[in-house]
Image (cartoon, rainbow, N blue to C red):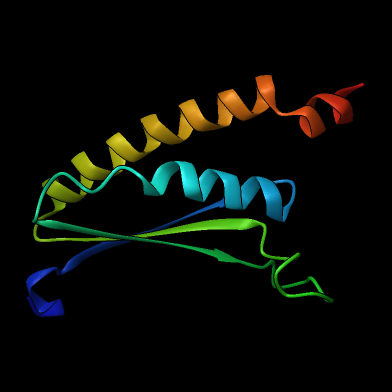
Length: 104
């Protein structure tokens, strides 16, 4: 299908503490395929604009790009993504050793 068949789009950027956490979140969220053929989703890791140095290590922002046939389909897909993201972030906060150590 052509891009014109998916006119509604949204980019969601989620900044995380480091590359490892961003990569872990991306891998956890990627396993669930988008349920509707009317919605497309891609994940990537991007760096902060003000960061310098190793590009991979500075890739601490989880970027999720959505495109859909209608605004309603886009909203439904993003709502589901936000629920899943909330679960992933909560698990990382409660169980990740580095996150727990940084709170001490």
